[in-house]
Amino acid sequence: MTPFLGLSAFPLTPADDRGRVDVDALGRLLERLCVAGVDSIGLLGSTGIYMYLTRDERRRAVEAAVRVVAGRAPLIVGAGALRTDAACDLARDAAEAGADALLVAPVSYTPLTETEAFEHFRAIAAATPLPVCIYNNPSTTHFTFGRGLLERLSRIETIRAVKMPLPADGDFAGELSALRGRTALAVGYSGDWGAADALLAGADAWYSVVGGLMPRTALALTRAAQAGDRDEVRRLDQRLRPLWDTFKAYGSLRVMYAVNERLGLSDARPPKPILPLQGADLDRVLAAFDAIRDLEA
Image (cartoon, rainbow, N blue to C red; front, top):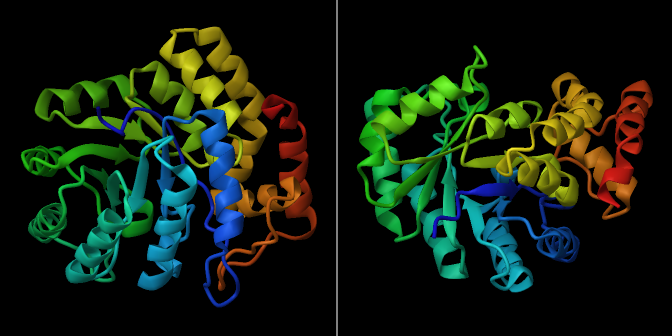
């Protein structure tokens, strides 16, 4: 059974100003996801500030997550790093701690060639037997996976899925058809404001930021799409639209920290140099969240 289907919820990783993970606060977030019944949990993704944490703290987070989740949902762990050897070490750490799968982005200061990206992923895939999801995140990594490269990578046995950005032309159906014609990868999408269209077009998974704090709402949208209930999907997406607009305006990470505090789940702040939202920006986010808070009841 692949862990790369349905709703994959990506929680924050609460940590102090020195990057020490608050495993108790993390456990509370994870427990909410397990109780809601998400299809998988994306630990140490972009929302989980993986690039702001040391190797030791990332391992502590995985170990704590494995204890709390206790097999109730597959745990997909981010293992991206600048160096290939470091990414391989992180992959082995995750596997040894009990993760179920890996999510890997080609993080690099110097833009990578396709050959460099291929060799990077081949090494990480060989480091553990865990299934790997390719994280195609060009807005952050400045690297875009072409279909030819995805086809080559899909021939590596443990590379099983790809997390795609929203297509610039909005043609989810066309992109899904093209990818499925060339690979056997499970194809999911990030970019929460496009989730409704992606799921209705037949995407295998929604890698969800909002699902990390509002799992019942994200699950309701996902299940409606899986059941072909377009009206319900559109209704929920319309309710969420003001929150999606704040994601676009401020970045989903800043928004989720504000929502986390509103929910009283922890007093975590984003890692510096990222600063918490304040003033009118914070008011806008909280108003958007408060207007949909009933969906999670």
